[in-house]
Length: 161
Image (cartoon, rainbow, N blue to C red):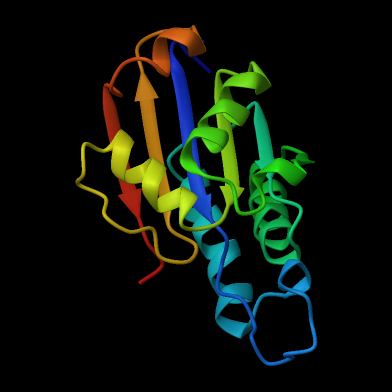
């Protein structure tokens, strides 16, 4: 494989969750049937692009961890849980990716932060990240300080539907 240059950030909004048990705390909601189907399918689609992250960061919420586990299984990269990603705003999500120090990072988290960050990084062209959507952003620099200060060089967006 050719050495990779630059920074790649992949945002994955957790797959569709199950609202059937109202006694569960929001943090403990599992994926529903559609979510259990979409997560591995979207992970496979991302893997088919040849992308392999150096790190996978995930919110500690069950629905995000389960989504991240599907991507980890497909991409062969372990998940690092991060409690700060649960309900995090866009700046926290981007900061967590940068703090990882990895050149290629996949972050699994929640709205509204995911949609806000995708919208910002796409120049407003991604308005909403539906469940299990995958947005990929690349920068022509190896330094996160530079990447977080400039617009991405390229981006793509994929949804399960």
